[in-house]
Image 1 (tube, helix red, strand yellow):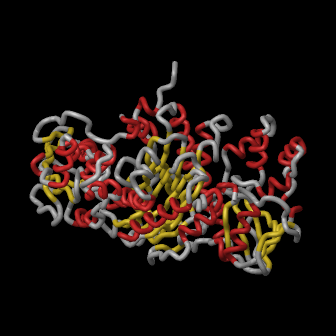
Image 2 (spheres, one colour):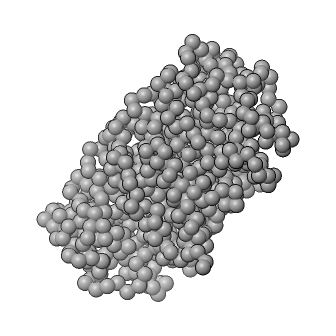
Image 3 (cartoon, rainbow over the protein chains, first blue to last red):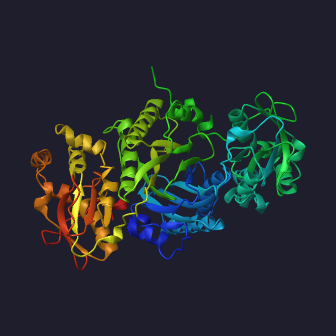
Length: 316
Length: 316
């Protein structure tokens, strides 16, 4: 039996399937179904971010299940909230899709969206569903600073230590395996399909005095470059501190590529990278990988990195 | 000279052109350029909504300038905030576009986004720019309830008066003129290209005791239907209270169509429709157009409306 499509079922059926019977946390004062949602912001401030994912550009239905794509869309927005030192509290999701999209795809996306939101105790509080030629998922995340100051890109200071929490390079390794039509290293395929940002470590780093923070979405060098540029400092990364992931190394050897390139320039792992005062002890779970100096730019073992520094929309 | 394109200029150039030198209101605590924005929510709650606009479906570059499209994207989200009885405070914008998109298009969109946000003293506080096959604009709006209770769809009560603030049918009339390749009635073309939601009347209606409210985005009958359904009531609209727009009537006569259909089922004007207690005086600028009764559904002059009730994504 052919699957029913979004065009056949209609907008309101799809929205009902996405929202009926879902449980909202206490912070959702008005959930889906009204003109807008109302979310508690006990801190008197709200953190807000948005990321758009486009089929064929940010995900492929041949490589990921709809549920995995839904999880990824939430994860990358939640990571941006965590990178400010905040806790994600609510998500809104606008979905564009062709009328021919099977309901199994929208149902799967929905499950993924809700599952990943639930990881931090948050929910989907609103959204939109429209017709488009390709699948487009636009997520907006809200977050609560819980009284802390936001951790900006611009706060790194000369003498700070650079540290990372979470895996690097695994999403890039998984993508390379998929692109080469190679099996094996299920950890890398999984990392590409559903990143696992260390959400709770954003607030932990903020509490531990992080001076600057970001999530690694474009690639470590690119994202540290944003900190260096915004803070008016240089950053040097120690390659020795990054290597040691046997699974990643093995896949790189298999494919005959440079593991270090994945570690330094692979995006979408959504690890957190932060700078801490030089005399501070980095929080448990964080690994020191570099230092902040005078000047500008990001170097690796004191030298300029030869090659692309990471993901760019439009290849620039 | 051929226009430079987004693909040639690259992501960061386009974002710089959209954000550099812009003025943020005092409520924007962290603006564009970091992992996320931080916006003041002095009320301890934040209102949030999202709408996605897709080229060819919600707008056409042949019929509207990029600036008009940008204004419309902000206006329809701001109207949702107003319909809760709140004041829009900040907008986030995710834009998907082909690499071949001229910078004149993204610059025009940007101008429109900022211009319409400025109407309510708000700003664009963050966003995303990605590659897609067709132009897709996803906007998220945040709002402040300023201590008031949100006005929901579900609060209408038997005996309430239904009132509207803002024009109806003009966007539909303008669209019909454009589709028929007809000139004339610049007021209607303008209404289709850039709706003018009566933003400040949302909080006014809330303060005046509105029991339910929505903005007219899908068509008056469809949107009042949402109130009727959520409130468990019926609504009867008086057609005589709606007519009297000479410009609209003249265009309808010209095209040989039913003016009443535009008034009752035309979407995208983003007027506000609300219910008020029967013994209340509706605020200045609002026009009583109907009454709330027992039962369910929406009628016109006591009878069921024959025909489509308004806009549906996917034609359902």
